[in-house]
Image (cartoon, rainbow, N blue to C red):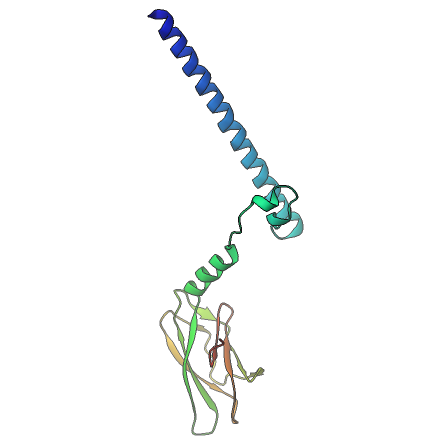
Length: 159
């Protein structure tokens, strides 16, 4: 009975020792890979494409990080063009709403691909705030685009 207990404890100690060594090696490997990725980011300014790494690149799944970042960015910073009309002096009026979670600023307007002046520019647009911009454009148009430092929208919407 004592001999069985001794072998059981010895076997348990060996299993725990091997598991701790494996965990240590896995942790060290992860730290080294993260260190290489971080140094690559500091040296080249971007993370390397892991799919191009010889031997192991074919086994790495495609991770859509760019799509995830775009979804988060679109949720936090978003504007919508609600409508447009003509002012009494013939200038184009464009109504814009901040539909994002944070304020937006640095507005720029484009009509048919050309930058036009916003006559009543607003510094920042708070969340859920709506503003009507008067654009220095008197003719007909095909497309309106409003850009900020954080987001953009166009009318008619791009398909």
